Length: 65
Image (cartoon, rainbow, N blue to C red):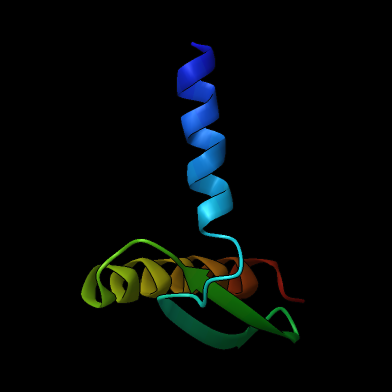
């Protein structure tokens, strides 16, 4: 258990300071939203970011006065 925790922390620290592999921006909720995704292929990261942006836009549309 301790070894697994140590390896997990080591993995997290190894990603510190690295540039994001995928970066996306959109304007929603009246502000600029930045999405950075690490550890995924560009295509998969783009799909994830698109899904997040669609979810945010849906919330904005439902909750905006």
